[in-house]
Image (tube, one colour):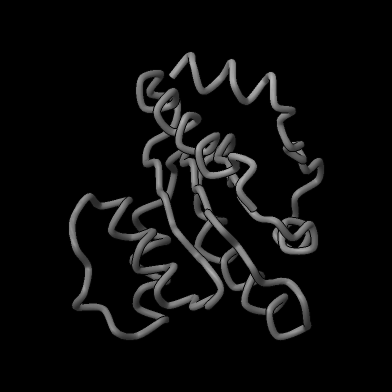
Length: 145
């Protein structure tokens, strides 16, 4: 960790908000506990722009999310994805695909993870690895910002 995956994803979101290519832009911090219900809730809140605590059933959340994304070109950022180590995790990652199928062509999912297998399970065809910065590049970047 610590090579700038999250920061790069934040810059992508900032750029895309100004370009208005994607709507909605959804940011979900996944972390070590991969909870599909919580991920759906965060996605729905980002898509609607309001809290959605009243939906406690996973199927209801999925239906609401499908409706919110239907026909839209979205950007979904899954930040700090840790899973993908076993079949159970692969199943959970596959669950994310279902509500995303209602979206418009051109929607994108950006996965920030330190585990290549998590990106692979999400269907990433060409993962981009972010190398560590050497000291000179780090200093130049630090001085710039």
